[in-house]
Image 1 (cartoon, rainbow, N blue to C red):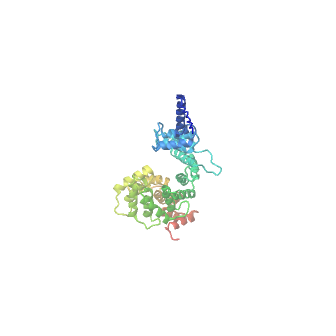
Image 2 (image 1 turned 90 degrees about the vertical axis):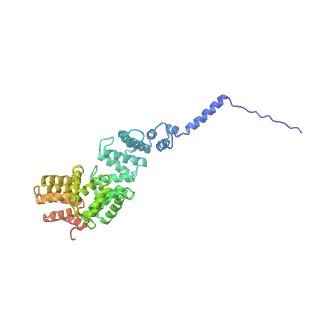
Image 3 (image 1 turned 60 degrees about the vertical axis):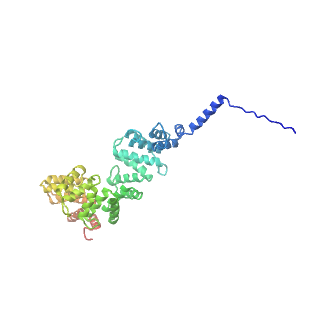
Length: 404
């Protein structure tokens, strides 16, 4: 038997072939990196890089905003929003509100889809653009443009934007005032865990704005929010106890709630109401020395507690100053200031008697849910046989300040 031995031929690659193979490997590796994909038109890679650099999950010589900006240039609206947010917060360099606004504007489309809805990135962008316009950041303040941004974002079910849009409707800022729409939007946002919306909704329920009074629910919501440390809810709940709105009147509990609100970064309304309670209240002891500076500062700086400040001026013999304080507060919807202005106008106390203006002031006080404002408004409207008497009686009945 003969055995044939086959000799194998081994071909060694040339140096040139090795270099070519190495270059090919390097190209494959390079093209697999998110940097390469982003720089070559992959918007998702840009957005991923931006977040990865921001969260320190990926090292890069370029800041996160660079990658978000590239993604924005490729039409990724979320990347545009993220670039704007980095400029707004100064997360990749100095704060630059003009750049932030420019990127938010790119994120927020001029139109919407056929169903009127925008995508998530645009929803964030439109909401943030609304915020920039509302606060005059990087652009001239424009409440109409702010509302437009919030409305687009709210249509995409963004709770924070629905909350901001509700404020516009409640205050008539940038859009016609509509308390029903405001209340509905607060309801929507509150149900989606916007705590600020819950606070404002409770206040509307307490005052019967945009719908029927719901005092029991208002108190439950305000108590819960106050327990969480929300100063607005604490002082609004204090107002309810001070005036017997849906609960038994309790001046001392009211003062404690106002004190709690004031303790949160010297919350202006909480401190104003605390000052008013210390100056004059059924809760003993009063402390005018501590209370007067609080109400004076609140009226001067925030138009809060102008009713209490006016009363202090009146006690000191400065009736003209008192009337000015009442007017200042009432012009900004301070229910107590409106009540005191109405009484001064009705009685000709420090000002010429004027029943028509007095009724207007009482009605403003009533519209803000103040029981004695409704009671005085109803009494004067009835005496004058004014057409508003019927509606005022309904509100007075709801607040249980008259027999119905």
